[in-house]
Length: 218
Image (tube, rainbow, N blue to C red):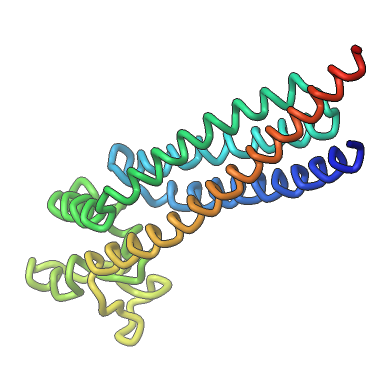
């Protein structure tokens, strides 16, 4: 019994460390993306949700470590409940991620931003510097509009011919969204597997501790 409990505790500690690392990674990536997202867009809302989930994961992992160290039946079952909530939330997020065309939504968000250039000058400049792109389809977009090519279309914002970004931002934004979807799904599935493993180990530990307490009473 003691060996089983020690083994379960060791497994739970490792799983909770993994959970906290994944949670922190999710928060860090989301905060990085948040700085360049437009408030109110679908991308912005999705990033805020990811930060909330990542925070909940980290807090739950801390509870799991504390419950494991104390071997408290009440704390272990509280941890199990938190994991069940996380699993339900994670399953919903994964289902939503697979059914949502993030690339198409990023395209619509960019086109809406580009359509009102006067109101989104800073936003467009930020995108051009972040993705090393220029205009919607290329630098010629500005020429066709009778405007000069802005400094944000140049590397390090130095107006030299060899530092001009040749690609358009529409393609760059879509490529970035494609990469984000792939990375996001990998993290979400990895998180789901670790949560399932932690739930199984925590449930087993809770049952083991409960049975031990019952034997001690009699």
